[in-house]
Every structure is written in C-alpha cells, then in structure tokens.
Length: 439
Ligand SMILES: Cc1cc2nc3c(=O)[nH]c(=O)nc-3n(C[C@H](O)[C@H](O)[C@H](O)COP(=O)(O)OP(=O)(O)OC[C@H]3O[C@@H](n4cnc5c(N)ncnc54)[C@H](O)[C@@H]3O)c2cc1C
Image (cartoon, rainbow, N blue to C red; front, side):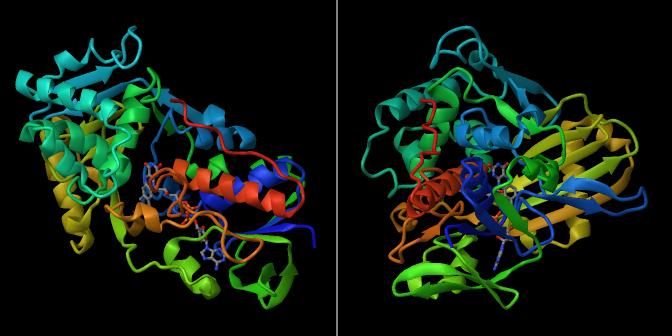
C-alpha cells in the first residue's frame, strides 16, 4: 500500500519515477505504449536502406534546463548530451552568421559576435539591444501573461527584420508557437534564462544517441525500487473517501498511497473526471519533423537556423547526409500531403545549402505531431493546474501543468519533480527534488 503509482512514461512520469525510486521509495510506472519517452521518443523507421532508429523529431535542450540535465544524470545518460556553443543563422543564398559567447560576463557575453551578424542591419541590432535591456528591466511586469510577445516587441519598436530574423527563429522553436499567439512571459523566460542570466545558459544540447536510449529500460536497473509496466494503459484512478487509493490497469486493481497522473491534458481530463479540470482554453500547437537522407553530404554545419522560409531549423544527424528539418507551430503543413512537404523542404533547403541541388534524396520520412505541445497563449498560465489536487494523494504532472516553464522537456521534468515531492510527502518521506533555475 505504501507505494506511489505514476501514470504515463513520458518525461514527466519518468522524472517523477526516477526521483522517488532514487530515494528508495517504491513506485510503479504504467505506460500505455511499448516504449518510454512519450512525445520525446524514438522508433525504428523502415525503408529501402533497412530500419534505422530515429527520433520522432530532433529535441533540443539548452544548458539552462537544469532539471532535465539532473534527470539525465540520475539515469547515467548525461554523457550523451553534446553541447554546442555556436548557433548558425543561414540566409537564403547560403550566407552563414555564427553567434557564440565571448569572454565577457553575462549579459555582455554576446557583444563580440552579435555585431557581426550579417543578416541584421545596424538599426535592427540597435533595436534588439534596446529590447534586451528592456527585457531585463521589465521581468517583473504584471501583464506579461496577458500580452503576446509580438505586442511587446512592437511596443519596443522592433524592426520587422529584427522580429523575423532574430526573435522569431529563437522563440518560435523554443515555445512552439508564433510570436503573435505566444504570451510574452514565455519569451521573457527563454531570453532571460537562455541568453541574459548566464554566459553558458544558451548552449544547445543535442543527444548523440536516439532519444529512447537516454531513458531505455536498461537504465532503470539502477532503480530497484521502480517497477515499470509497459503496454499497460491505466483505465481508471481509484478515488475513495476523497483520496486516491490506486489505479485499475488491465482490469486489475493496484493499490497505492499516491498516484501521479502524468498524461497530456486531453488524456488527464478524461482519466480523472472527478478533478473537473478546466481544459477548454487549452489548444494544441503542431510540430513537423522532416527526415531527409541524401546520397551525399550536403553540409558541414552541425545545425542551422533557416531564415525567411517555412522550414526553420536543420540538424545534421549523420555526416551531412541525414538531416532533420524542423518546423515549429507548423499549422501550414498539417494538411499538406507528405510528398508536398518533402518537395517544399528540399526546395527551401537548397536555397541555404547549395549541395542539396545536385543531391538525390534516397529516403524521406515526415512526422507531423499535431498534438506536439499546448499553445502558450496569453491568459493560459493561470489555468495551468499545480501538482496538488483537491483529491488527497492524487497529483498532476505533465508539460501542461504549472511547472514554471513552457511545454518543453525541462517543463515536463520540473512537473514530474514537483509531483514527486508531493508524493514523497504522502508516503511520509518528504523530499525536495526540484532544482532552482541557474539565474
Ligand atoms: C515533435 C516534437 C518536437 C519537440 N521538440 C522539443 C524540443 O526540441 N525541446 C523541448 O524541450 N521539447 C520539445 N518538445 C516537447 C516535449 O517533447 C514535451 O514537452 C515533453 O516530452 C512532454 O512530456 P510529458 O511527460 O509531459 O508528456 P508525454 O510525453 O505526452 O507523456 C505522456 C505519456 O503517457 C502515456 N499514456 C497516455 N495515456 C495513458 C494511460 N491511460 N495509461 C498509461 N500511460 C498513458 C503516453 O503513451 C505517453 O508516453 C517537442 C515535442 C514534439 C512532439
């Protein structure tokens, strides 16, 4: 009976499980699918060249994602995260501008490479500098969750080019929403923690193995207190006398003193109707990943932000021959047939990487994640529920809950740690798991 149950083996549920089991607290994790990782997972993709394990989409973290990195450390997976200190911005035509931190302390660490960004004019750079200073000064502003990031940028008289070529490439991919739909509070957080608060917070972490290997089954051997149940969808949460008593999975009752529901919002609402979650304001924002295997190397860059086009980022996954192209907030692609998505990606990519023109695509794979994240609209923050609920011992986790971060891997892990803290308390063994932001 003195166990915790975690429902959902995405990053939120996994983080909660690792935190509790790491303290020797018994925990059962139930995951509906046959593998772990949820929306950040990998699987074998077939094709003429044989099956290759690929990620559903490139997942990027920044060094300021301290809880996510802590979670990887618990699993022994942190050595698989490679940090990149340069961002490359590519213009159509192929011109490349790198952005990297120099020796000066934050927030002056970009003062060496920022003036050299060739895709911005001096007016754009001045306006950006002004806005960054304002961002630092206005962090406590009360209305940041009520206005959009675009409203705020316009208030700060950002040039259209600064918005399109600087703010948008960074924020649309970080928050998975357009600037005109995203609450300014999220944009503030990304720029503050990633680019202003410390010299290294911006460094981009990319796994050197498929995502599934970061939290694959063998990593859980170090947690004897954790029992993982795969292909085990939870059918019901048992609530008796105002308290969570366990779950039903596969028709079998499993008792527990704390139940962490770490499901996406659309599933959580249905599984625990007794919470009466108000989810009407939650909407999804899609992400499209386009995987392209060329017959030759088409770039020497490890990654790049692609300016002024539909496609937004590319990541080299294998010697310049296998690229993952990412489009966040990709509403314009959701209804486009697969072949047209591939044609568009290839045509646009060739504008940035000239080698693509002569290369042949040997294989392509398109992943449209229509329910990638919730749309971080103004006004939503107050509606994100905290970990603790009105039902004793029933806790919520997931990237959509009130984690203090937007819908990201860091947000999911933070929510898992917060729920695990409350679960540990319910088990009579209070613990702290959440690490503070580096700022
Ligand atoms: C294409 C794409 C690209 C992304 N890129 C990035 C990125 O670059 N950087 C970043 O930080 N974030 C990125 N994200 C966001 C990130 O993946 C998510 O925020 C995070 O993985 C959400 O984790 P979660 O645990 O909250 O939810 P989920 O991952 O959705 O986990 C929920 C789990 O619950 C399981 N489940 C559902 N119903 C049941 C049931 N009844 N019983 C048991 N289990 C059940 C599901 O199978 C799933 O495994 C991206 C997301 C997508 C889709």
